[in-house]
Length: 332
Ligand code: AHG
Ligand code: MN
Ligand code: MN
Image (cartoon, rainbow, N blue to C red):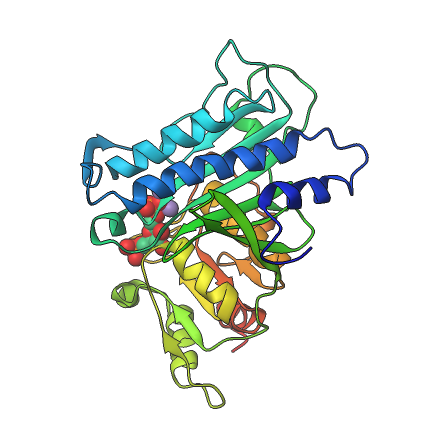
């Protein structure tokens, strides 16, 4: 398909035609997430004007202050997909428990997981933020509401995953298992236009992204790996850290490099949540030829034991992630 003239809807329909048994449910689901992201993008882009930045005077399940845009984005994501008849439940970073489909709407076979607004601490200072989503199929053919156990599937079983980056332009990047594709929002017509078909993560990079303020709390193998990058004989690495996972990941996807949020003495399982942050981005990374691990295994192999389980995350180009694992195993 041609860049510049293929919009998201056309791309999804062409993808759908590859599956004769497809009912179109998945297509409308991704389209609707795209619709929600356009509304969120509009609010993000005028947050400074309307009184929508700043704290929402509420806390989420993680004890984190919710920003007003977190709550707004969460509401828009739920409203955009809860009535489609394609879902049997949703899980959000902003909700303690699974979000039920309202009685009046039919249920479907998909489960949606999302971080409605990632990088919230950057909202007030006008730095790029994002939305992360993943789509699973329920593993049984029950018609009842989803329970927590239905979401506890390894990331490799996702049917699709993606993110929207609200940056200098708004981009949707998604994969349904046939490569990674990027769409740039043309706000003048309100359409996502195919701009980055078949995105590939460079085999190696020269960028590392991590919060170095945590250095003293990292274990020795992580410290040795970071020192390895700083003193690399063949490559001159540069450090880039935005503090928005989606923005840091997207840059490394395009340019190559590695993002780390490892375990530390304060965060024994790291900070990021497996279900709706680590796994969807790991799905994208692997589809683009990269890799994503925690401290011992591939992110996509981990079966969550709850909606908000945290996991260390090291994600990016194969060379750097494999080198990290060698340090973790004591092979280097
Ligand atoms: P969220 O805003 O959804 O809570 O996610 C914030 C995450 C992630 O976007 C980012 O990589 C990380 O927090 C930054 O954490 P530190 O500020 O501890 O570096
Ligand atoms: Mn997040
Ligand atoms: Mn968030």
